[in-house]
Amino acid sequence: TNLLTYILLDTSESMGYASEGNVSKLQYAQFIAAALSYMLLQQQDSVGLATFDGRVQHYLRPSGQPSHLKEVLHVMDAVPAGEKSDLGMVFNDLAERVKKRGIVVILSALFDDPARILAGLKHFRHRRHEVIMFHVLDPAEVDFPFRETTLFKGMEGMPELLTDPIGLRRAYQEELGTFL
Image 1: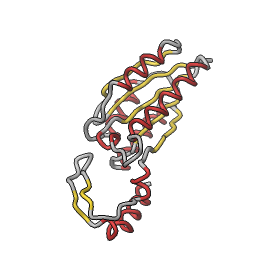
Image 2: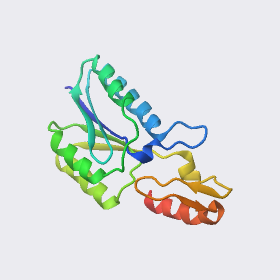
Image 3: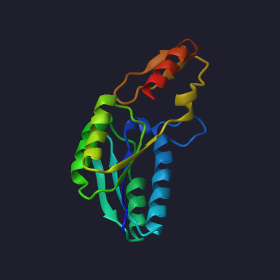
């Protein structure tokens, strides 16, 4: 049987972040999506792709044709990091679009309200899809290596913040732990 896999790629503003010396979260997620697409198509399975920020930007229906990889890569390459995310709304929209049962692979920083994310994920599960999530974070978001007074750029609708990161580090890591 032909396995259907739907890859959902978050292209929201926060996915464009890259700490010094690293690829952006969006580029990293694109590498994963490209590798998965290649592997699945080599197995003669079908792959679909949706890119999204606050709404679905592009939607490629699943195909098992080897030439489909070129389309998947083209869509991913043409998508810059965009607007604020709205994962709950996007997941509900895509759960309605994705008719055939399959595997839904989500590549995202998951910067949204957890209750809205869970509601969207439940919609996929209600439609009997298997869901795999890749939580994409930059090493600096996890380690918080900042030592000097730093101007942090606001993303996903948040303002800029000039602060002493050493005094902020413990509270940040506690908040991140709760978020994760």
